[in-house]
Image (cartoon, rainbow, N blue to C red; front, side, top):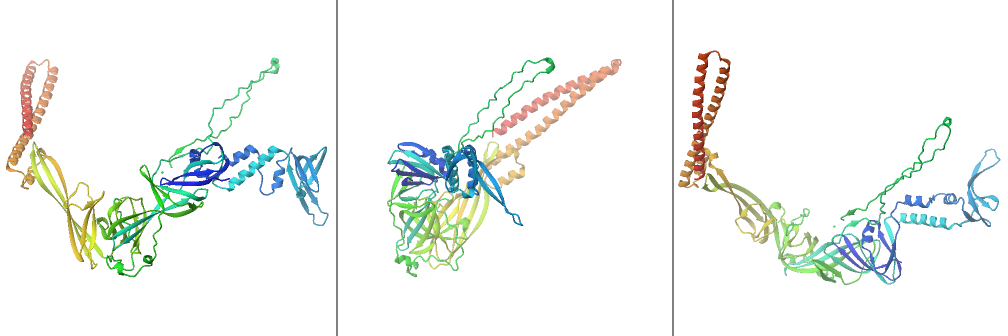
Length: 639
């Protein structure tokens, strides 16, 4: 008996929780093969004794175990080949009981001009002490008397039957009578679509949320209690269905024969090993795998209409009457809302029936909000002005597609997301807009700090929006401007989202202009030492450097010039010192060579002494110059 599902709870993470009653002790739970791991992981039954199901082993491996493989064509002949050595009972004109020896082929030849050969299969039985042949075509009944083979054949037939039921595993559950079973399994995530009814005169919007439910299980849902939950519980797959074969080490048996004693003439036996072939082993492992724009998003623009779609904010209600006004097409909502932590559950008040492989639309909630018609213009989509309903307050609903009706007339489609402030549904062709952009950067302030100039620059980005309203009425419009990183807008917006500033405009018939200025302020420190005279004069000509700061900067520049001159002198002294070292080395080398010539030797000694005196002077000058350079640098830093 198949159990009776009573409650179904569907989550947005793509899993479902099922509760069923089980009147009898034994019941069957059919499960899609792809869902079996989740059911094995979560199945709970009070009074559970056991759960049995067909192994996930490959059919070829199971057939190898039972040793049965019957052919569909020639089934009786194929079966008889498995009966050799077993006792059977056959019925032709009467019953015969014997042991099967095999199946033979006997050729019947006719004595005509054209020899015809007909092959007949015969079953060979040993009956007592006699061997008899029975044509297979004459056998009306064959009874297998071996119970083990009967079970093997039944197993083989069950495998074939399950193979035909592709993708379904039947769980045979044993439990106490009148028990309850619950489990979790993957299922298509429920979705939401909306029907939005807007009354222009009352400026009231009624939104109806309709869920789309799919029964992707292997069981019909008949008269069940349905819960639809917005939460996303953590759920993952874990392989419990596939047999897990653990690879074990193989120990080779050490079997050696004992060599007999023989005469030397006869030779010796070699030792021998009875080597066992290492069996191949299948190895599989269970694997764990995890299986779960901003406020006021514009709907994509619809295709070009054959003529302009106008707002008709007052006149629309007076236009052609709609059939929908005469007929209330709003669905009846019969659900209760339950809070489950941070999630919300919609419980349908009436029993639901959804058969396997079927889907259903079920209204689950309605919400009324005040609003008004307007036009949405976004600076990155200025060619696509959109008719929209501006909501008095954001709505907190799940994401879904919406169909919009104005006074009962179909107006367009939209996408609703959590926190939506307006619902854009139709391309407006009354309003055209363009944007002109200008940019300039100027130095706003310069301040002398130590030996640096602190320069403050301001970049101004000006947007000029030009609008044309072809409608005879003024149209309330929301202009959305993309936020720019590090820029501040001069005019405070009426509202803002994560990515846009929003400005409320009332576009009168004809032409109008809106200008917005964005500013970015940057600062940099410029080391005076790195400035040449032209660069410094450029900064001074801005008029932003005070006379006192200019005088300080000029003194710093003079000191910097002096430091650079002294650094050049220091380098020249260093080179002169190196030259004297080389000169002394050359004199000493010559003194070694001219030991015998006293006059020349004395001459070189005088030169060596003069060089040493000159070297000491240069060293003193170098030390003094280095001290002066450091003092000047400290003086520069002190300004």
